[in-house]
Length: 395
Image 1 (cartoon, rainbow, N blue to C red):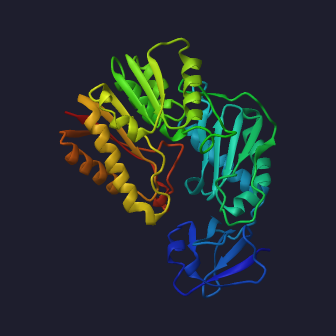
Image 2 (cartoon, rainbow, N blue to C red):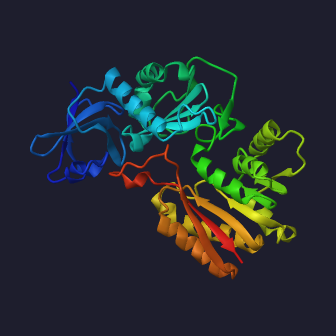
């Protein structure tokens, strides 16, 4: 049915532990005619079937879809999407009138490597991170329409920036089912404009939902600084948490515009909020901003996307946190994050530890934060844990 890939002797060990990646160095040979994005059957050196998955040129050569010898058809996609939906229902995120914003499919965490699907009300935003998932997008969409039923009306496919740049593909950002101009979604009772057309990721950082709720708990009566604000998510929660002042900073004029729109959507005419379109490091370097804030959020974009950049990324996290720790008031609370997958929890914590020492502040850890339950981590794929955060009390 599918063409075959054969492993070198002993290279099936990780697959026996259900790790969903097969690296190119583990492959002995392949059948002729296999093209990037094809579904392939994988066999051990002793010719025993071990997995079926998407083939791709690069270090990760096969992303495993199943460890059973089965056809990847409509029933397969429906079964996996139904499993993903059921889990979100069980944890109270799906079918929640107070929250129609959540991740339905989180790649390897939902046994669908290379696929992301986020729910924004009646619109689902789908992203492919592999050539195979790009090739399967229409089949996935058909299954999604069937599984979600009247929960959704639109599917927007957004993979222009996520597919391998060397793959010769007609990348696209467009609706592949339905179509709408309504970009408002609800998260924990708050409304947000979601820019799935041009925004980062699928248009909104859903993975910070629970961390935004925690920040709301600490915001009452405080002066708040939200660095790298993007859509202003933390700022909106701080406003509802009765912060006395909220400043949002981002170097992107589009991000500032979106933040202002989201503040106006929830708190029209509220004078507690102000935006600054400025580089984060430059803003923190300004001595006028010293001892102004009781609560600071540092949520930068990924400083490192490749292992070669790890050293410089850790230096960047240290430098950023030094500045935040230097600027926060005595008795202040600092929320600091890394979304770089290659930066481990230990790496990040050491960078922040170094920053505290350099800033000369007494610091205590109040919370250790991570991605929420709708971004599950496959226990056989620890690489899926990417979001790290610390809440610090600073004296």
